Length: 371
Ligand SMILES: [Zn+2]
Image (cartoon, rainbow, N blue to C red; front, side):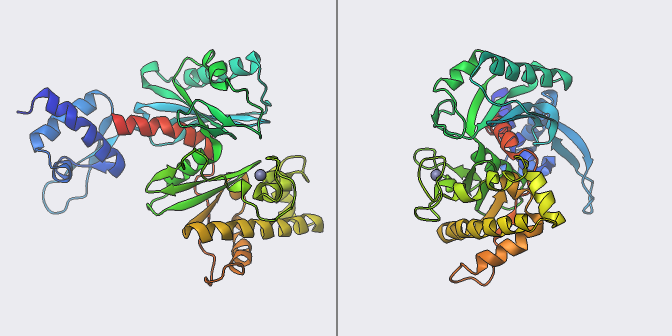
């Protein structure tokens, strides 16, 4: 008979096994993890008592007795993700399977004021209340921002897109009573994208929203670099002495390919730009877009030369590129010295608030890894 210590020690490994395989059976767990069947049974009882797993039916018979299918309970824990931008903010509630159960967008511009921070606090509490999330099932709040965040996830080290104060985390701490951390928006989105993908191949996630950034995903993790500034693709120079970028330099990819380059023609509404483009009534939009694709192709080709992996188009623009991906591939292909196609340019899979979801995912991932 295994002792309690043995059960607790194995419970975490068994839970992770079920979580990563989505469903498993008693004998498969025992075989895969090298744990005896009685220990597996005891650990499963413990996990079931904790509400983390459930009996999800039976596997198809392979001749003998049908095995019980054990799966994890997505609603055992929850996290909130918030994407704060200059002009609006988004709140999402995610379960352990990164299903977004609630999603709220507020067109409130950022301001460094108590009323803004208290509004965030109220929104969090309201979201928890209306979804009946018990305190002991709530993991925390991940906040995505268009800024560079240091390793401790609570210090903003570069904020040009949005004017955050140096003590932003402390300001928020006065209002948010739950654990919370800050994340770079593009890195968060890249993380959510990785979650959706079925293979483990490395990807470069190019996030194209009101600013351009990205994430390098290697070995199922986001590569952060030495200073947490990896994936700042928006500031690659694509045209020497070109257009001025918000960073103060000239010719950055951001100056040519941010969503604002297109949405400035449709009152800041990027979806409207793509609707107009599709309608095809205004030749001007077509011309602007053609030029846009040309610059985007230069950026993508540079990324392909550096990383030799799939380049996934994300962010607000990436999510709208479906109809133009073939055209973009063709333009990019012509820039590539040794490839006959640019099929490596892919659409993103996670298209609903990836930055907010990716920030929430941090807490989900921590829970599963350290349980
Ligand atoms: Zn720049």
